[in-house]
Image (cartoon, rainbow, N blue to C red; front, side, top):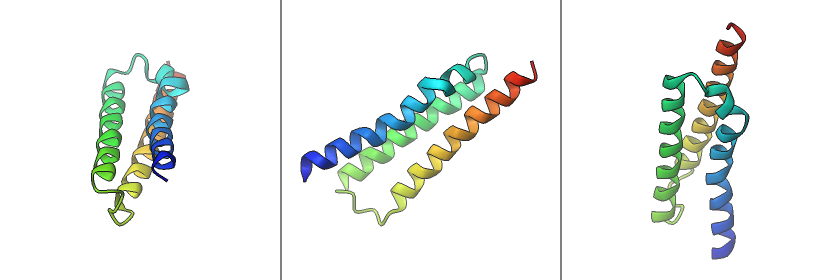
Length: 88
């Protein structure tokens, strides 16, 4: 069970980071404020994951909801950058 948690945790951390590094990272290029926000979201996601691990994932589902909100914020940053890029 412990190995399964590790795999799930790794996937959960890498997914949002990979999303920004993929299409989102390119869209954010040239938008330093949005890039800084994306980095802050990455750090927040990692810290929440660390908190989950430290508390043996017993956080009442609230940490998972916070991570979902961060994923949504990352998606919105990408869309905002794409919109700004379309206007150039």
